Image (cartoon, rainbow, N blue to C red; front, side, top):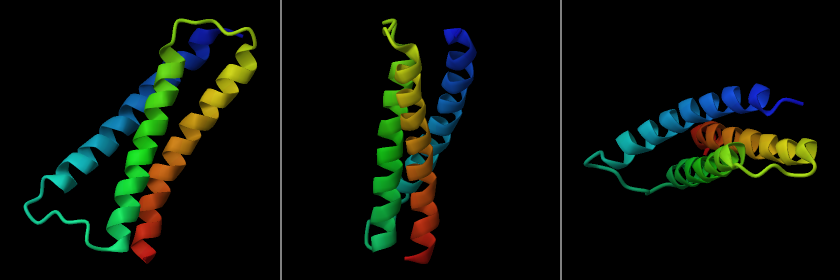
Length: 99
């Protein structure tokens, strides 16, 4: 198993998704009328924040120089963190549309 085959595409996609999420949150919270007034606002904010944290942890794990003994288990967990970050962030936006 070559680490470079997994690292480069995941790091690139995490960068793109984090850029989208940070741009979305940055534009949203800097609006003059920004206010977490409804349940949907809290769901979106919390989901995006949790998604960013999960993606940053996955990015750290991908870029960490340590070579674990069981690489398959290590990268399986990293992939779960990565997918969890994506699912949480974007599903919070979808759920908020119905709240």
